[in-house]
Length: 449
Image (tube, rainbow, N blue to C red; front, side):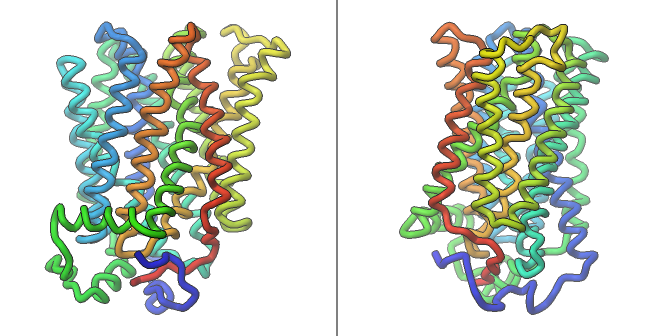
């Protein structure tokens, strides 16, 4: 695969600028899709403890249901990424939003745990396509010369957390109003956003850089003819391309870094609601309130990370935000317990678990950097596929498998969910070490190929 970097004026954005209204539509609908993605992704985290009680199973078993949906996201990332590279960003984003919305709605009617697992896996396939396509869309619409990609990437990623904010409110609302059946209503309400997929399809202009890339390859985008393998063969060829040679080494490094980064962030994101419920005995409204504070801290950090990416470069800002998160793990692991700060529910708002939780939520602000950084590592003809591969393989392993394994290890050692959260510090440390090996892409133009 060709290098993703170019020193010349080779982008369509530089030779035929978008109208301001076109860029705003792309940005708005990409942000909206990411909010839905985050809400659907997060609602299951809040419902884990209620679901364990409802189906009479363990929290550990429910964590593997969530992990299975993350693993399914890998297939969705490759499927929808290849579709977006072959048929366009607009169609790819529309179908991924429609898929996870419809299966989230179906999850509300699951009669048993097995059915819920199947439906969450199918929803995970849809969730798996959104991130890489949205980042490709925005990166291709905003040229590096305007120095906005970093802050817009941070804004886009923060919308995932805004979805988490929606999920926290929905969890509290449905739990208090519908009791033990609240999880069904929560997933049902989220599923109704499927109708907005139509708005995304009608309201977004196609990426001009993608159109230029298809034209350069002798394609006819309207008819979908590219002179390249079609269907599944096209996806396989694209995956093979990003996994071989120099590009393959870059993909392996970026994926490993993001596995560690996801574990560093999602150890706390996955188990904090269960910690507040099972360890501290808080009610759903209190858990949701803590979630609001945590998500707001993370959103602010994502925006700061994105702004720093434009000011300092991608790599340095990623490392800076990760170091801040590592300090949060130090607080969670050592400072509070050693100083014997209060940890009782009665003094929760001044306790070391709460202070460390807020710090940790802000500490994975490196996700405000990763999206734009990854999108700049690959050329246009395979950008969505490559970015989805890195992001969703990493999310499956780092946000799904690793936290579930951490909880299993903690329980084997006779510890509770707090030990599983603490193990996430290893992930943050490894991510910081690996980030030094990836190339800097600051102010690089994107190739139209």
